[in-house]
Length: 322
Image (cartoon, rainbow, N blue to C red; front, side, top):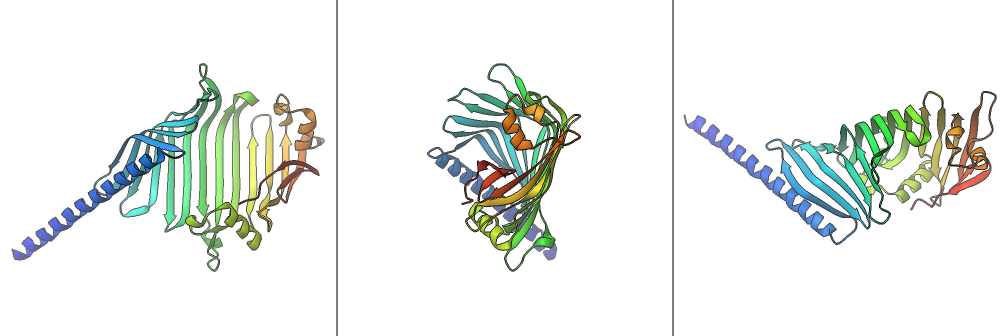
């Protein structure tokens, strides 16, 4: 009998301790969030949640912000609800979801934009301070100009993006990782360019990234790329619809002065005619090159000391990565 009483007492103490600990953490998170938003009122951007709650007892922590508003000068961004959830026993994984539509307003110019979706989910997993994976999935994304009525600017039926660690490429001595990036969009509609049912896909690797996300910066990345003789390897960025297609491949790195360097090859077919309303013929010729026998076009691009060359002609200059 005594053993049973002791066992029950232990269980009660453990449960009581867990309840106290969970609510203590929840209160601490709520207090910290309130302090952060209060401090942002005197800074830029200003971040405000009309209602912020912590739920999920007993084994989850679910942070919900309702009526989020972010302001920076004349520009404001609003979102009906955003929610982040994690398990208490697995705090390195987080699932984020958002309810739309999101609204973007510019009080100076008067422009109004709205972004809607059926679902928008983000998953983040870390390994300590090292990034393991980030993924984004969205369905029926719609970008609308609603300054005067509603004008559909772009629609994407399915969108997915992922950034993931490549464990086999880990440089333990230098504490550097390689990340793989994959982005895909299906059934893309862009009315301004007469684009319907298009597909886009990007695949790339990014090397020499610090394994501690607290050490991430453009200057450190440029230094690592130069020292390790690596950078971004663009395996392929492709797009196509019923009448047009393009493909871009190449590599990007940095020199000792943190200036971008690299080489790219662009192949297109029936892309120029979509842009003739916006870009003059001479510039289009420079950007896309001369036509081949099948009416496709090939152009080489290079980056030298931060200057982007189309063929041998400079077209754009990038600042140093610092």
